[in-house]
Length: 286
Image: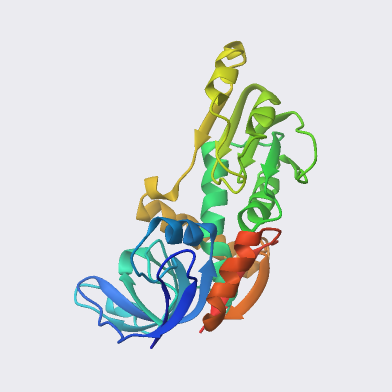
């Protein structure tokens, strides 16, 4: 089978051949139909000096079931998330990270919703968004932000989608997928008891003195938090994913696909993502 291998950030991604793996205890094999490309893949390439296969989300059809895994998964259309090695024609994952696709939902729509939708969902949950809240989504043009905007509106929030050069505006909640030097200015615009959740650093780390600006006006009781799916259990992740995929199948939430590229163009997909300006999710198909 074909896999995409990273041997260093500056070298790029290469197509390679590998033997398919048999599923072990509690695992399944999936014939992959769509793969998500995300910024975490770029970060992992910068962090990992040795050769590895990137990718943490894919959708496809379960082709084999290992001992201890539910045999009813065999032949099912599924989304798999949170485990590495997704840039491949076939993957082996724990059955604990599978969610069945509802109805005729496409593999592409499932992956475009997957990890992006989970980040958006749990950001809004962490911020305790309530009807009437003014919610600013930084990075609303991206795959996560696009879904966060829709989810916040379904919670009856008043949603603001600032462009890159817009001045910060007052808010009860900020979902920040960008961070960078402008973070402090957005924190300053939080109302009393405002909540700020950072789930991405596309523009770099926030200013080092961010805590100082909060403490300088502590009577407003503003809070800043971070969000990583690594702190959320599989049961909660799977439940949220099932709900989101059902809403996508019903047409009440619409993921945004930026482009679909063949698997062998993974390196080009990474270059486009690193360049910036992409609206939506980049997908790879074997």
